[in-house]
Image (cartoon, rainbow, N blue to C red):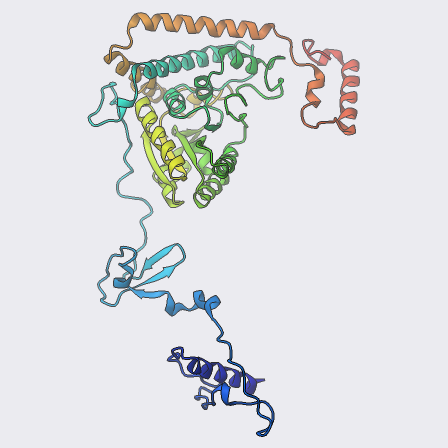
Length: 491
C-alpha cells in the first residue's frame, strides 16, 4: 500500500510538469523523508509489451480548486497587497501579513492586546430638543409641520390620560390588570408617526400609543381591557394584550422577547415579497437579557432583514436595575457586535425619536438591513398594577423624571414656541379626552361577556372530539357549582 501511495504522488508530480502547469516548489518525499526518484512522463508508458504498445489518449488535467480554501499559503498576503482591497493598519514589522479569513481580512500583530471590556467614553445620545423644549442647532425637525406636530402632541396627551384613567379603573376593581406607558409617551407616539400603516408592528406590552396613533379607538381599548363580547380577542386575553389585523399590529404576548425573532421572520417575508415596508419590533431593556434577543439580532444581520429594533431602555426591568443586567454600555453597542447599524436617542425627545426612526425606516427598506434604536427614557409609573416600584426606587428619583424630564411637557413647549398651541387648547383637549375615556369605560361595562362556547372556538376549523368532551365537562361542573362561576358569562 505504501509503495502504491509513493508511486501515485510521483505520478501526480510529473503530471503537473508534463501538462505545462507550473510545478510546485515542494519536493515529493517518501515516509522516511527521502526524495522520491523521478519517473518518466505518463505519456511514454504504454499498455502491454513493447510490440503491443498502445499510444495513450491525452491525459486529463485534474483540478484541485475544491481544496484551495484549505491551503493556508493562499490566504496569507502582505499588508501592502491587502491594502489594494481593504484598508489595513500597518504594523511595526515591514513584513506584516493579514489573514484572508471568511468575513474579511484580519491583520496580524506581534503586540498582544485585549479588547477593552468597555469604551472609555459612552456612546453619545442623539437629541433635537433640550430639557426646556428649545430647539438645538442643525436639527432635523424641519420635516415636522404644524399638522403632524399637533397630531403627535394630542395623541401623547390622549395616551397619558387614558393610562391614568384605566389605572384608576383597575384600582377600583373594574378591570383586573393594567400597565401604563407613563414617561414613555414620546417613544410610543413619535416612533409610530415615523412609520407607515404598511409597516408591521411587533409590540411588547407598553406600546398602546402606537396602536392609538394607527386609529385604534378609546372604545376598542376599553372593550379589550373589559374582555366583553365585542373584544376582538373574545375575552381570551388578559387586559392590555391588544391586537389588530386592520392596523398591522400583532397581538401582545406576555413572555418577553418572543416577538423579536418573529419580527425578523416577518421582515424577511416582506423582503422576499419585495414589499416597500419594514417591521418594527418593540421591547424593553429587560428583553435584551433573553436569548431570543441575541438570536433575533444575529438572524436579522445574516439575513439582512428590513426590521427596526426599538429598545425602550427605561433603566428598570421590573425591579431589576440595568447595572444588574449587563456591564456593557447599554444596548446600542450590542447592535455593533452583531453587525447592525445602531443609534442611541433621547427617548424623552419626541422630535429626536421621530427623526431617528424615520431615518432608520428609510435605511431598512432602501438598503435592506436591520437597524437598532436604543431610546433612553424612564418608566415613571409602576411596572404594572401588580407592582409597587417605590419598594425598589426612591421617590425623589421618580418625581425628578416625572416633572423635570417629562416628554409630554417638553414637546408641548416646542409646539407652543411655534404658535401651534396654547393654554386654551390644552384645557379643552384634556377635558374632552377624559370624558371620552370615561364614556368608553362605561360603555364597555354594559356589554355582555363572550359566551362560554367561544372558549373552545377559533383554533380548529372543525372542533375535535377532545374539545367537545372538555366543553361538556365544564358545563356539567357549572351546573353542579353555579355559585362558583360568574353570572355575567352566558352559558
